[in-house]
Each structure stands twice: as structure tokens, then as C-alpha cells.
Length: 467
Image (cartoon, rainbow, N blue to C red; front, side, top):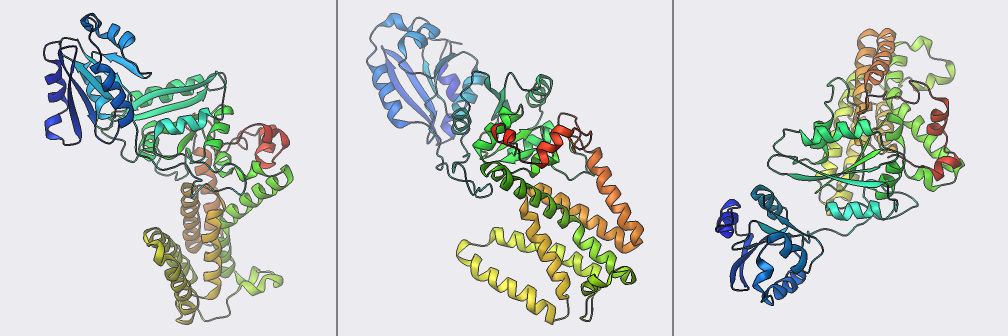
């Protein structure tokens, strides 16, 4: 392998066909040498000093052995000797600089990477009223440092893995060795190592589909995404596994139940009484967003059973389109507006939102398409979806609500009951990645843990949150 190692590496990474792969040829102690690196992914200042040192070497005996040269003559911290050509290729394409010296069996890998990245700032989605204002970025090493900064314990482990036949995406499993479920850890590690996928282009979603085969009938999320390092550190301290992926500004928390998904950092940044009220309000609003429109539709199908005190819920305006179809159209329209808001340029978002609010409220009612009560209830549902932090859970609630609406419209009171029962069965049949109940600690019931999930106790404040 030592024969013309420079040409082998150059041909192996097709350096001459890619303008961003640089071959910097130098002479070290009268030997032809070459530095291979990807333009834009290295620290120029560090590289300049390293090259200056290599030029100063004049002792031929230092070049007798690759490993000895690496250990005694390379003035850098993150350096290793590598003889496997495939690992050399992968390292270079990952941003590591490789030094190949004619006559040596392999290359010296110097990790002088300096990825382009944005500054750590508060996540747009995971905002809090109190607490830290930093968040994960797209660089893996920066994210592990944010977690390590919060957990200064020898039991904290950062296990490196790689997945994706083509992308070879860097993955880190973050866990406490003295608290983690070792069986679950081994299972997750094996699934990632044996993943036969070409690429993890969608990072978090692609990886979650690798480690958990979703059942099509259950839309409920099986993992928790968070962009906050403080929440990730708290989950790790509670015995969970946090998965960090290169190019993803968030972490996957596993295992996760529905109570974990509904938790937020603000529950713990306020005193116990306030935190309990915030959490309880979130639970009530989320449940109300599931049942408010089906209950209203059911009441309109049986107006004689409506108590006199609630007689005002019966529409007084003429109904041109059946209530059921009004609700279904508004369900679709709300998602359309949400997608439009995401793709609207910032400079136009405010005026367009005002126009949209006018058109879809006053004009929509006056034109006869919708009645004001339908607009009111669907407006509550749209806003209530944002009372909890998970988009995936919001859509799961939406799908269950639509199912109950359809069954109520077709079968009346029996359909409404069947919809509730089916929703409960789907949640019971859903399992976490560890194979435990999705409704734990409600099913199976654990009084102490259930109390901890409902009430924000002082002990929980000193413990950990999972988000």
C-alpha cells in the first residue's frame, strides 16, 4: 500500500473531478507529501501553522513509521494514524484533513474541521418565558458541547455511530451510563449500525424511521424532538437516551410517552403552583381540541337533548352547507393557511395575515359558506393545537378528531362513542420504542409517577424534565 499512497487517495476521492477537494502538495524532509481536505471545512489558521511545522522537519528518522511519526512529530491534539483506505476517504469527505507521505503505509488524519454554522440562539419553536436562551445548531460537536456543559459527570457517555451508505451521517447517542436502560441502548445501537439505508437526508425523521417501524394506524409520535440543550440534559439525567445527528439542530429523546411529549420547559422554570397550573391548562386545552367540534356536531344532531342553559349553541343563522362539511372544509383550510404562512416572505406575512383573517371571517360568514359558530369552534381548535409543543401530536389529535366527526355524522351518538373508544384503543395499542405503554404511568397505573406527571412538585423541579 505504501507505493504511491498519494495517487491512491487522490484517485479514491476523485479529487481532480471535484473543485472543492484540495490537494496541497508539500515536501517533508525531501519526501513528496500531500494534504487532502475539503475547501470550506477546515480552520485555515491552524492549517497554516501545521504546514509551517512540517516544513521545518529535517530528521529522516522521524518518517520511518506512520504511528511513531503521528505520536512524536505532529503538533496537534486531534490526530490519528489510519491505514484503511475507505476510512481515509470517509474522513476526508467528512472534513478531516489527511496528510499522505510517500513511503508510509497510510495517512495522518488531522481533525482541523471548522464547519460553517450559525450562532446558538433561542429556538424559534421551543421558546420559554424563563430559562436559558441557547439552542442546538447544525454542527454535531457544538451540540454535544452544549449538553456536556450542563452535565459534568463521569457517567455521561457520548457514543459515536454512523449511518447511511452514501451520506455516512455522524450520530451520537448521549446517555448516563449509570441510569440508562442497557437493553434499550444495545437495541438502538444495533438498529443504527445495521441500518441498510442509502442516506439520512431528512436527518431526524429518517433516523426515527430506522429505529422504529411505525404502525400506519397510529399517528401518535413515538419520539420527542427538542431544540433545547437544557431539556435534553434533563432528559438524559432522567435515564433517557438523547440522539444527536449532524446537520440537525435538535435532539431525539427516547423512550417517550404521551405525557413526556406534553411537558414543556416552562413547567419547571416557574414555581410548583404556577407550573402545575400551566401543565394542567395544557392538558385541558389539548383534550378540548379533540372533542369540542364532535360534541357540537353531536348536539346539533340531537337538539332536543340540549339543556336550556346551552340553547345558545344552536345556530340561529341560515345553514346553506351542512355543519359537517363546514367543519371538514375548515379543517383543510386551516392546514392550507398554515402552509401558506410558512412559505410567505416575512415582509408580506403581516399584511397577508390581516387580509386572510378578514376574508375568512366576516366575508366567509356573509357569503353564506360558513356560519359564525363553525368559524369560532375551528378557530379555537387551530389555536389550541399550539398549546402543546409537538407538531406531530397536533396532527395526531387532528386525525382522531376527523375520525370522530365522520363517525358522529354517519352513526350519531353510537358513532361518537365508537370514535372515542377507537381513539383510546389506538393509544393503548401504541408502544414506545422501548416496548412500554404509550400511556404510562396511566396504563399500567403507577400512582407516584402519574402524580408527578400531573402535578409539578418540588422534587420534580430538582429532578428532570423530558421534552
